[in-house]
Length: 322
View 1: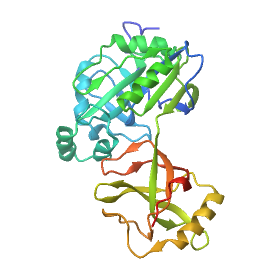
View 2: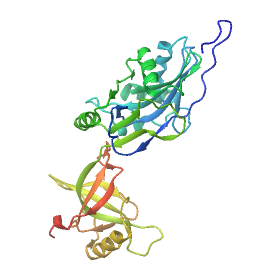
View 3: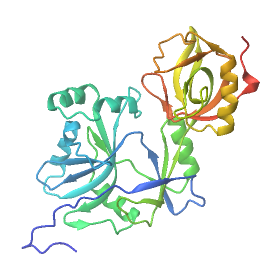
View 4: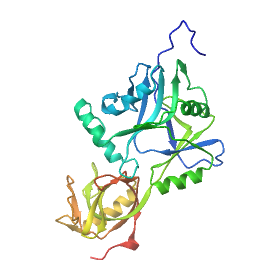
């Protein structure tokens, strides 16, 4: 209900972001909306209509000073109290979100440094929900209604945009996301309310993962385990100049696999790194680069390392000869 003309509109409330549950694409999908999953930092934007905005990260930290280029959005929303949900990204030269570039911006509170970084690696706020507008809280309305309200705000500018969603056709959206190299898909039930701070089954995220065969060139000791049991393996990929370091993989290994790896790694130890580039890892044990493993990863960092790699299995069929 709108405020009485003699009454001041209610101030925007603090609203924690609603979270998605990991899972496959929903089937059937006609009652679902599909959006691209953006590889960035979740952010809730609040403005009282005075021309300024406040940005709060998912952690609850105030990150307003970190992204000064987003302050101009306050002028666009001048006179309107609003709470908007979105994702802050930094785009690379091809227009795709690059988390490594965003990491340079995170945590910066010094105004001069933040302004300089805003010129070098400008942030872009992707908006996908409106939770409060002109004195009215919208969290109890449906996703479809909220998205209609958001689209009517016409928020598309130099550092922000409101991408459309697709109703149904989840597989087609997935195929498009894979072609574009984006992180994944978020499916949202069209009838769902906004549940602040809750990881809800009404929102479902499906991430795109890359599968790679990597060469094990070293390992690190598992904390608290017997001597020789790996906590992580150091892996690389063959390149024109030799084996290039690609990062550390410690997630996804079973106890049986750890025991099996321990036996193999003890036999093929060596005193120097097999990687052609620098792999400065504290407590590294180097091995002959003979074992091949299959891993999955979300993407590559700007430093050329696997991001969030997960162990899948050893590949004895691809073992390299010494």
